[in-house]
Structures are given as C-alpha cells and as structure tokens.
Length: 222
Ligand SMILES: NC(=O)c1ccc[n+]([C@@H]2O[C@H](COP(=O)([O-])OP(=O)(O)OC[C@H]3O[C@@H](n4cnc5c(N)ncnc54)[C@H](OP(=O)(O)O)[C@@H]3O)[C@@H](O)[C@H]2O)c1
Image (cartoon, rainbow, N blue to C red; front, side, top):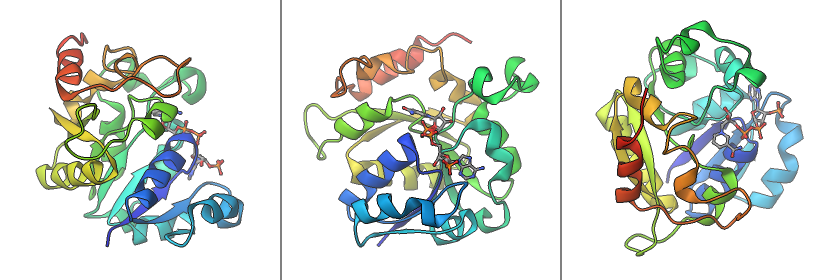
C-alpha cells in the first residue's frame, strides 16, 4: 500500500490526491493553514485520506507531492524528506512569486531550486505542464488508446521509476525528459506547457500521447 503525502492541497495537489485515492493509495494532506482547514477535502476523499501538518505529510509519504506557490519553496520541511522521492509540480510566475534572479538568468530550473533546498531528497518534476481540470479528466486505464503522457524530469533514476509507476497507477504514461537541468523543456512558455492537453475552455481536455509530448519537448527552445 502506497501513501502519498501532499504539501499543498489546492487545485493541482487536490486533483492528484483525488486520482491517488481513486487508485487505492492512502493520502496525507497538508497546507499552510493547518489540518483543520482540510476537513472538507478529507471527508470528500473518504477513509483513505487524512490531514496533518506539512512535517506529518512529509514523514508519512512514500512519495511526497510539493504543490505550492514557488515563492514558498523554502518552507518545505527538509529533515523528513531526506532520502525521499519528492514530486515537484511548481512553476515560476513572477507576478505571483516575485522576481527570482537565478530563474530569470536561466541559471537553474524551478525544480533545481527545490532540489537545492531539499539536498537529501530525490526531486522529480511532473504535473507542472497540465491544467488541473485536464489532469482530472484525462486519466485512462493502462493500454487505453487515448491514454495521455506526462513529462518527468529528475536526477535520480530510481525516483523516476517510482514516479513512473505511480503515474501508471493513476492513469498516465510518463515521458522521461532527462535531468532536473533538462526540465526547462516543460516549463511555462514551452510547446509542452498546456496546449498538448487542450484549451482552458474545454475542461475535458484533449488526450496527448507520448509521441505528441515527445514532439512538443523536442520543439522547445531555451
Ligand atoms: N492550477 C493549475 O492548473 C496548475 C497546473 C500545473 C502546475 N501548477 C503549479 O502548481 C503549484 C500549485 O498550484 P495550485 O494551482 O494548486 O495552487 P493553489 O490552488 O493556490 O494551491 C496552493 C496550495 O499550497 C498551499 N500552500 C501555500 N503555501 C504553503 C506553504 N508555505 N506550506 C504548505 N502549503 C502551502 C495552499 O494552502 P493554504 O491555502 O493553506 O495556503 C494550497 O493548498 C504552483 O506552483 C502552480 O504554478 C498549477
């Protein structure tokens, strides 16, 4: 039985939690305001779900999903995530996050920043390039002709394999982009960011095969 911890349980974190519970995983949710503010979501998700502090979610998870505004990344607890696989969904939006010089200079990727903060963890970037409503509706069983793929990047092969298995369990294929340094290929503004899965106007989204995602990744320009 796999437990997925969540640091951040908003649009993307909450959607991944719903998919996780539907696949039979336990989830432990957390946010910035405390577990009591998550009781409605926990009730909706049912007996596989609980809420805790960010430290408790980090400790409980076999995989821990960090899905918060990027500007808050330094508040993610470090010690309980040492050695853990950490999924990073985050994107850089200066109007929300403020200017971050190293990102503006393209010295580092957003997930590279989180990896520096969580030095002992194994960060894998995924879910950052898909609108949460499309993520909620494009999950398909293994082998389905219209199954969609998500790009994943990370420096640790075992962690990427663990995340690939998790994605498969919740209804998605994975396309391995490479290292965290390569993850700019699915950051905002690239062909892979958004369009392959359809438009905001259509909440059902459009399935995007692994080949479609590979082509979008190949077309990215730094
Ligand atoms: N929305 C999308 O479709 C989408 C798609 C792909 C990627 N993303 C990216 O994923 C990240 C999350 O986006 P979102 O749309 O899910 O945001 P959101 O709906 O605003 O949710 C953010 C969550 O993070 C929590 N949070 C904020 N600061 C925190 C902290 N210091 N410690 C713990 N939890 C904290 C919030 O809890 P409180 O309410 O208690 O503060 C909330 O649960 C962003 O980086 C975003 O760019 C979003």
